[in-house]
Length: 169
Image (tube, rainbow, N blue to C red):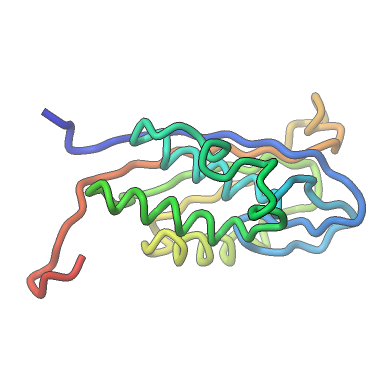
């Protein structure tokens, strides 16, 4: 018997570099450095994607969106998240909730969290109260603490898809 819920976790980290935008949770944040990656390098969205894929034992985003593939160069990670959510739905599941944490010394992310939650929720076809986003520092420890990169962790809970009385999901 398939359990009534599935849970997955995800993690991502990218190096901070000059001359790149800093995008987290689909929100461009003013900062002197941005994240280096083949796509837009949105570590928060990538961690959520990996959590969703992990919940269904589907591997990781590198399998579906390989960094060496030119079609993903500069890709908007929210669009990739929409694709992953569609794969989740095709398999009969839906997002119950997502919780995440971004680890960064700078910039301060608190002012941007409501917008991140809204954008992520829209891509996941859920409400913002089903998407948790927190931010913390690494207390100046390690590469994230030394402002060499930004990391994110996420967990996703999936439940069976439901259909309303009109037949719509």
